[in-house]
Length: 113
Length: 526
Image (cartoon, rainbow over all chains, first blue to last red; front, side, top):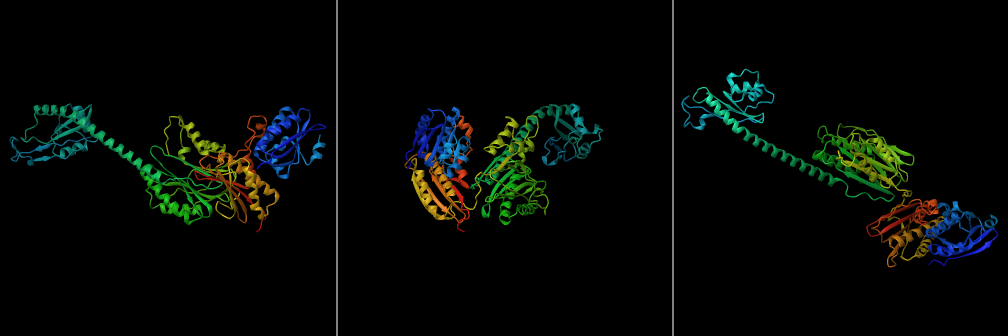
């Protein structure tokens, strides 16, 4: 059922933009980690684009927690945008929102740098 | 002290040799006990042989009785320095006084008889003791049997509540009891009590009291009326000097309201966020005096609050130095959170009393906890209208199909987007758990989904085949620990489910496990 997850990294002015498409569940772990590794070959922050993500479940939250753990150990800032209201609430309840900066839209996220 | 009888022979013709005298012509001297400490006892112990009654000058009621019975000679039977008995002899049939030869002969005879008698006495005492021990053991067995028969066989299973109980009798089986009485409208009666005295009498009073409580509980909605009725009924039935301490609480398992009355039993403690609250309600123990009034106390239990009822076997347990466990320690232990309050309290008590302590009194504990997820009460399993019922196979990802179908089923109910998404996430996580944990990812096993609705709530019930397995309580995941790599990044599922809906309930029947997700219909079609 779950749509194939893809993640790609593109450089932006002060870091990288990781664009995700599909379902963030346990299957997203490897593609997302690969995109993150690609993104962090250049210094600066990582901006996660959730606009094309249709579903995040608890195993996907675990994947993001894993990503946040790595970023924190590297002292790297994580930003995000494109989350639906529901997933913003989920990120708040799980406190993921405390460890990343969540923006309204791409413009705000990019400008935040 | 044992008394020996002696046949006193008297010749028909008032004298002459006794040869051939028929037994019917002898007279029996009734036993005359010599009380310990009587002056006669002292004389007989120190005499060193038979004592002529005529020679004695004592102020002794016993001696007067001995004289009145016509006793002329007393032959003490002494063993190991104790007066075991005495032979009372009347006048010789020849009417001659007892000669010194007679006395020597009788003295020798007494010396032979005394040890044999002592042995016989000891055997008889031991037999009596053994019989008494057997009687006591038998009585204890009967008392224990009565109690075991009457204590609840199983604990009430109420969605949103966790009820547990512990009962351990002391060797001498006291009169502790507890009971759960199902009442109308989803209310539950909870009883804890203690009959003074031990053994069979206490067990019988407990049995009587229990029946009276069960009957009164169905008649009155007020705990104080229940206790007052039981008190009046018990007063004429209960043996003097016995009484019953008893606490009766009625819990409205929907709203969490507790109303209780207390007939002199240990105070109940309520563990709350702000510490331990004592629920005081005055009242005399049951069975002492008729016409008693019982105060009532009300308390509304919030989510996560725990009520602890105890018997005095806990508070009055002693440590090896003789110090009592006491209410202070009990309260301190109740104040600390515990996964299982019963286990925590028993452990604490055991470590206090020490490993070699023999339990002095029955120990009884009843713990009633309102779960963190017991907010909505409007609905229980089986109520409402079934909107849809379907199943998915236990394959990863199938939760999405379940969510889609559930969303279609509830579409006519007009949930707003926010609530619908929350319900979807809760259903997705619950179905995932059912697939992964309940059915252990075995594709041939199905996860059943039922969607129910009432005017007030929608209820989604997710059933898997893992009913025999324990479902852990959701705990707040520690994000810092996860980020620091100290905790697995996973473990969000149950936590999320609890946050997404208004109530989560679960039931198991030994083979299947069902989780019910309840969401209120805010301002929905009324």
